[in-house]
Length: 358
Ligand code: SF4
Ligand code: SF4
Image (cartoon, rainbow, N blue to C red):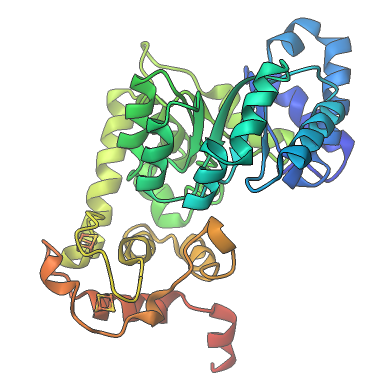
């Protein structure tokens, strides 16, 4: 998705990926020229290192809502661009809303996925989702999907139980973007670096997910150097987390909790639903990251994306709170939720506009 500047850039990322031991490449038509560049890079790899090329698992994704005919045409184009007779994995790209699931299970998407498998154009089908836990649970329970790609992060663990339940059923689980969406961990702030020392925050994030049994991490490399950490990542003594890694993770958690004091949101979701549909836990999680770990840049970026990314991210920010008080008795930690939301909005909202006023 990120190595789309040129065919040469994609080729160098692919070379670095196989050199690092990576064996799964995920792409999509929605990523501009990514598939075309990847197809060229795969052709080169097949000539130079045929055994490594043969071992690669290739995944691509189609957006939900296509007619059967559109989907058939798009899948054929995917295969043509990638230079492959068959995809290992075809995912529904962004099964984020109930209508997307309906499309995939009972609508034209269902016919498309069945056709793709019957024709031998894909080995297995799955989905990526940024949607609610209930929606993901329903998709997994349908038994129509053999893998899923979810937001699973060291700093956002709410979907880990879902992922583990999927793994127990034999459904492969890919963690979407643990580096970027997991907190811009490739450019960590100073407090986080200090708390994680002697480890890099990204190394701990990757190791945490692998220790949880997650079968694939999506590393989102834009250049070969983005994969240097991956090439150095290996289990120590057969385990992804050594006692020193576990001590670092515990220290980060306790330092974050100390900075937040009794204003920490514990992400239990008991405050929901809000009549104004304010996504209280998601917003207070950004506040937790800002205050607890100094992750201001990430928190601001995510907060200011609210309402601007369609069904890929939250639609309502903290400003929508009407202080009705409905959530207050539901919070087991007696948090002053409306006050914390207002403070979150002041901290994170529209940084450029705020600077205009000094
Ligand atoms: S006080 Fe605000 S956040 Fe809480 S339920 Fe009412 S509108 Fe929603
Ligand atoms: S109930 Fe309280 S602690 Fe739990 S998610 Fe809501 S605000 Fe956070």
